[in-house]
Image (cartoon, rainbow, N blue to C red; front, side):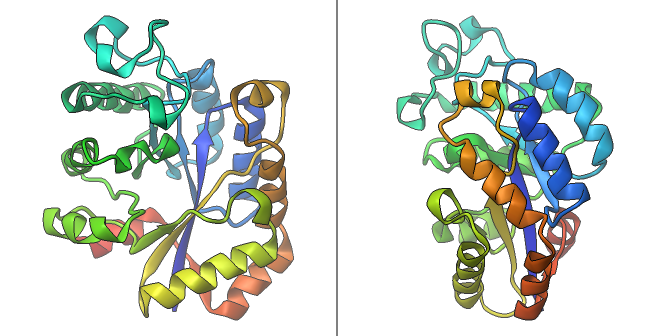
Length: 258
């Protein structure tokens, strides 16, 4: 059996994104989501919407997206711009690892303050994949005892060596112009062919409803609604079943890692 976690990034980004993600979980095929705690009004949204999807929320660690850090900017100068916010793009990140570690721990604390215990870790704009930050990410996962996203084959051996539970791979190419059912199935077929029998894979997705705030914060808007339509369609469930794909959750990854 091919096992798949479908995870929706960006929970908390806007009201429309939260609404779309919750719909994709409660009425569709999405298995979990990851929350951004540093965006405007995200705390209130996460606290309110997470009640509808208990046990299905992880943490989307941030150092980008113009979010406001949890720690005072003067304590983490390498992480922020002159305005005291994270840079917008990953290319602008100049993070000192020790400062990133302290900020990410503060983000964990904020999510817990909102009544949410994270069930796994990943990051916004894949920033945890940077060579200077990946060890910080691994240490945080170990400290919290949480499964973690695995995007690059070169990291698989390190995660295994450190005992961090993780899917065999995270599929990140169902994005942009190919956010239709055919694009999803092609992505999965390629991913499972590489992973081999018995692998648990993660499929990254970004369902949501477009609102004015999203258009002001993100360049990725209309495809979110296209993703939502695919992820809530009955024919998608039928197609996955025909491929022999079984949906699962992060608890299975955590169990396999023990």
